[in-house]
Image (cartoon, rainbow, N blue to C red; front, side):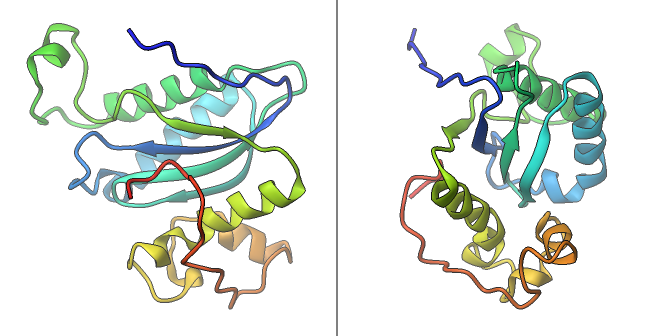
Length: 177
């Protein structure tokens, strides 16, 4: 079994990429209300701040900050994934392992996380969240994607509405190449 090493920093800030198991599905935008409810319920149980969030049809990106005495982002993702999956009607195809473990076939088991190192790293990952729908060809302008905290940040004066970012951003953000 692999030994996954996670960076744990109390009160830290992380960037995440979380994928559906079947990347041809569009469950996240088709059922975005259920996803929002799963996130809200999890935030009531385990506090965290959403610094940036974008939901695409088959994956999502987020930047979170945890409370100063907390390092456990994994339990939050487990709860979000479980709550979302339980809210969906069953119907996905299951392989024998998932069937034997009574698992749903909604999410990839793991997720990508990156501990934010400094303000430049933070800005780069927030911008990556916001440019992602344009990068994947879902919209031609960042402001046209409805499932993004970009709109909240525009209202707060952190970004201009016509912000365009850089779709050719290089780096490792947990996405397929």
